[in-house]
Image 1: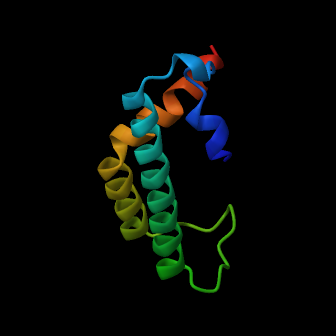
Image 2 (image 1 turned 135 degrees about the vertical axis):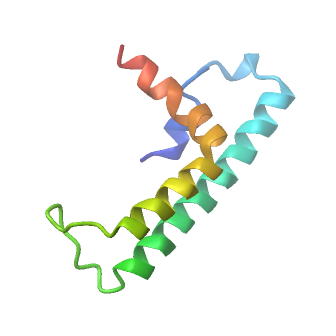
Length: 89
């Protein structure tokens, strides 16, 4: 997923950005990177050889850990992803 695209999906006009918006976007980008690293770490813990495919049944503990991770980063994910999904309507 292209983070640069997500950062500016809600408001594409840079001149209308307030300092608070710019600061929030920078914080969201850092949190996005940390969240992606955490997802990769969880995946590597459960599938260290990277052998899972689309048909591999996922362990419940893995799904619970991912859900908890997504809940911890829910506000950031909504800010970044909501504009992208709104454009599909």
